[in-house]
Length: 210
Image (tube, rainbow, N blue to C red; front, side, top):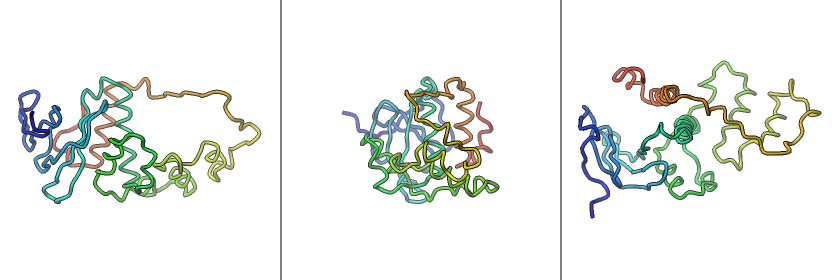
């Protein structure tokens, strides 16, 4: 039986400078040379996750490989949201992860390096404090603690436009998928922007995403 992690060849046969290649659970990972894979953390329909050691900081990180990302629109959207939201919210408390039913997903989130999160006021320095307060309540990681739609409508930020006389509960479930028409090229650009936000040096090394 092959070991869970071993050296591998690049899928396209081209080795890139500063990269190493490993086979993890039969999936080839391309990693920066500073990372040393340690062990698989899990595998499922949406990818393979392994823990790795950052040899520069001597800290453990989680590395996720998602195969054929752009072939499935739902998976691409889910990945983009994961990239954007987790970097803003920062590391969550143990109690705020209990709602995650998938053991693999919980293990992956817990294995991420500690992050203090990004204050919304630094992202939107000109925003109204009440606006930021509402946005913060809407972005709470644990859905059990997140503000409800009804509560959000009654938030002080919306008091000038909220009319309780026309606020009635929906009689049926409404599905709004505004992202259905997003093209692969746009999705790639959005993901690239998220990566460059955390690693601006990549913009100089690789140029814009195509």
